[in-house]
Image (cartoon, rainbow, N blue to C red; front, side, top):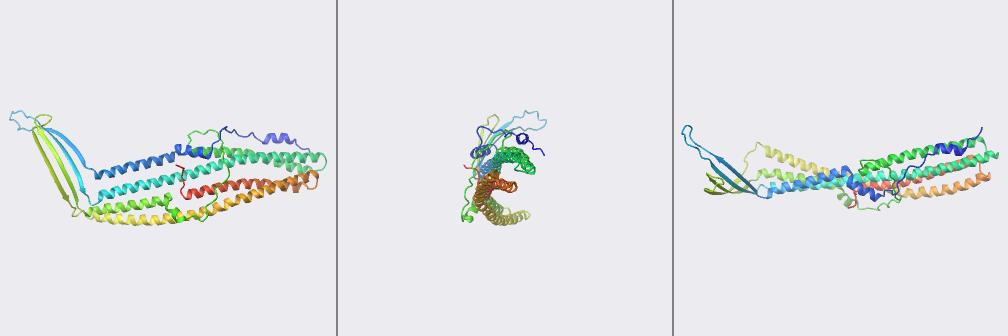
Length: 419
């Protein structure tokens, strides 16, 4: 069987490398862009600003109220033929709640707890977005390096096929060996093309994670050194600092404030008021002046059991929030344990895979020299070459798994963007 020219076969199956920008994006650049443009993060910040503004509404219960009114009226008897002259009046009133059964204070506490709860939600959103962004960045970095690795492997298979072709021409090899070598070249070309498509998908995902509205071709730059996992971290203290537990804590504080607010119905309320008034036949009225001052105390004797039902419901809601806090602590601690062990495994696996890759490289060079001299047959040499490809692939994959595991740990502890 006539061998096909290897250089023509490789030209058909190896596409050109994808375009790369002159200035690749770093991890810090991606974080900065996502912090400014990610729509989910911007929406979370707007919700937080809204809740903070509502705190001022609750604080208004401690301030006096001031109102003004003005009017005009005319009176007369029908058929009397007398002209009715209008009278004008103006009134300025000042009121202040002196005691509301602690309802105003409870409302302010509830608004403050709602703000802390929204702050925790915003932190949780930020941690999730950082995790998604890191995963997309790592995937893009991996796919870029994987594309380069596939190109190197394709070039290696090309050289191998050329060596087999030369030995076949010299009568030292069988045609089936060249067919196998050329099949590896074709397969490597397919892997290069598939890697190029994977790079594009990874970049599109990273672009969306950063909050870009339009996709433009870019590259990323970074290293594969994952941070070492913590050894015996103090998890109980870390649990209290996570956004999930802080949100549950703020929710409990809000329900406790709502319980105090419901109890205010069983206390009397005390209010004070002062008003100034003027009236007269012309505007502005200046003929008659008067003032009033008053102090009122009110107490609801019966509200159709509504107050008691509301109090019981608020007490149940507070107890449920307490249970939710216990659940949040337990689940967060479990997430720590579930994230830390894979993190340690993946981190240690990197050095193992790299050592195996280095050994496979050395073995491949030895096997190649033995094949060139005829001391090793094609099948043994081909097996060593395949082992090298697997070792290179596993080493690169181990690096990605380590970075993903580190990102999972940072997500579990609620780490967001640096301030």
